[in-house]
Amino acid sequence: MPKKFFKKYMPDPEKLKQQKSLQFLGDRLHEPNLWHLNRRSVSLAFAVGLFAAWIPTPGQMAIAAVAAFYVRANLPISVALVWITNPLTMPPMFYFAYVVGLWSLGQDTPGADFEFNLESVLASLGDIGGPFLFGCLILGIISSVIGYFSIRLFWKYYVSKQWHARKNN
Image 1 (cartoon, rainbow, N blue to C red):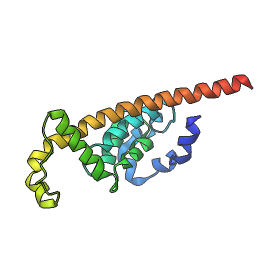
Image 2 (image 1 turned 30 degrees about the vertical axis):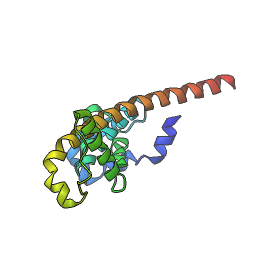
Image 3 (image 1 turned 45 degrees about the vertical axis):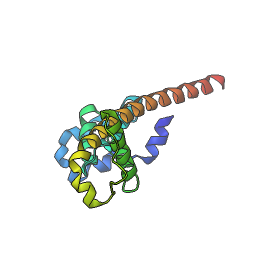
């Protein structure tokens, strides 16, 4: 089952519950769906983690953790998926978000005279901010919906494949 694949990389819930830095969460940390590996919790975790990955703030992991608490998604998977945006992938992903934002707002891309350096970016931050954030929102929604439904379909496919294998043996 897909459960075995995900379980191999999951931290031990009992060790996490004993962490002093997480005690402020109280009994909410003992919520079973935060740690269970089932189709619902994992697909919700993919939706939460992929959406939070497109939020351009340093606290993406905290946002993913809080969202996982509220929707009762698998906490470790939600937080781990945020690392899709890491220092290597962040520039191309966020530039793509900016281009998507420009395209969806019907604006033109910057001209050839635009220099991509810190001074130019800071000078035109007002012009860049709106399309960039809108593009992040669009891509966050799209990737979370695709992640949610693809995990659900993958899980259903894998389970039905296992049932057919058992039935044939």
